[in-house]
Image 1 (cartoon, one colour):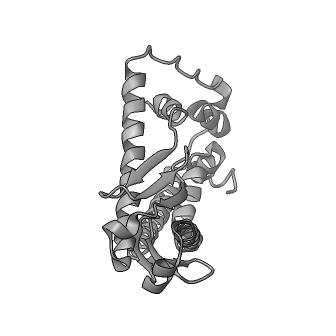
Image 2 (spheres, one colour; image 1 turned 180 degrees about the vertical axis):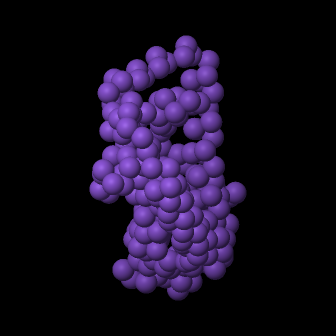
Length: 234
């Protein structure tokens, strides 16, 4: 399944979304990243300046849905094709179980010491999970702000990179050409998304710690040190 998901990524193209009046278009690139906003000059025939931001959010959501639909279609197409060749297993000497067996050897294991080591690891894992869950929950409630250089547009982005709100200064909208409004919107959203990503990288360090812990316990050398602490050192 993972091979099909990877293959489907290569079949995704630019995704577009529009507001209900079709005067605002948001585009995402083939990787699903925000690319730009295009506002038609006719926007003022459909919306008051105070309403333009809502139309942009609507178009952004539509673009995200379009991306999801593309992915679903790509997976469906792949399901109708022959099964991909399964990746070969790594050589036996690289497999976890055989490598651990080689490290531990045939000598007896001190059951008390091994059990104590496993319990310590489980407690550390539970602590890492608790910290990661707390960090994710906290970040999901966080908000980041982005503006264009002229401060004609301000956007609010949630912790997962979703566009929550777009505020367009009415005076800026009324005196600006649609091209300049589009550029300001693109800049503000880009800055908001960048701020959210930067803040998430710091706030979600506990998730990185959990991933690092998981990687360590998947290392046969680490497990050998848990099972035979008198022989190996973590």
